[in-house]
Image 1 (cartoon, helix red, strand yellow):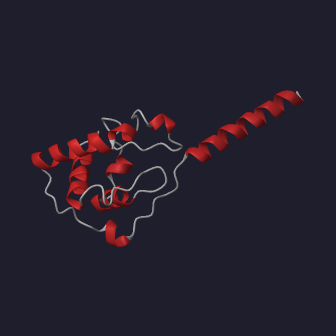
Image 2 (image 1 turned 90 degrees about the vertical axis):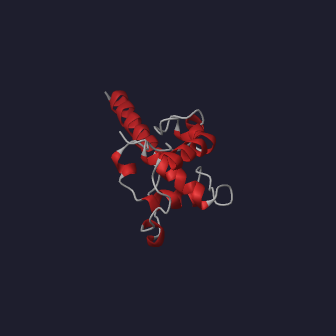
Image 3 (image 1 turned 120 degrees about the vertical axis):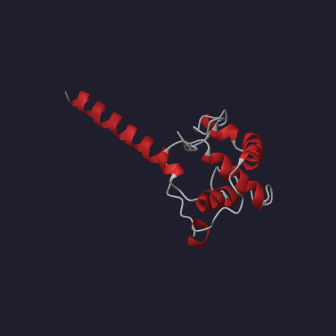
Length: 131
């Protein structure tokens, strides 16, 4: 009985620990970015450009459909996120711009790699990934 109880407690602890470690910490976006409006109009030209940039720079981790299932996702310590979900789509364009531009931890920063206009095109494309 003691062995069974110890096994149960150990398994529960390990599962809880794995869950806590794998969860990304909240990503605080400064108010001036959060309130930014996307200066690039949503449309075919922007989403086409955004798709090309997303495919080249983002899909390897975030997946072709933004589900967080890219080929590199398995090697990451944290789940890269599901762009089709309401919690992602409910964030402002400024939130997405800031996170893409500045990066953190395993998410690389794209400041200096993509222009601001390019990042806004990617934001427009990511908006098309909602369910």
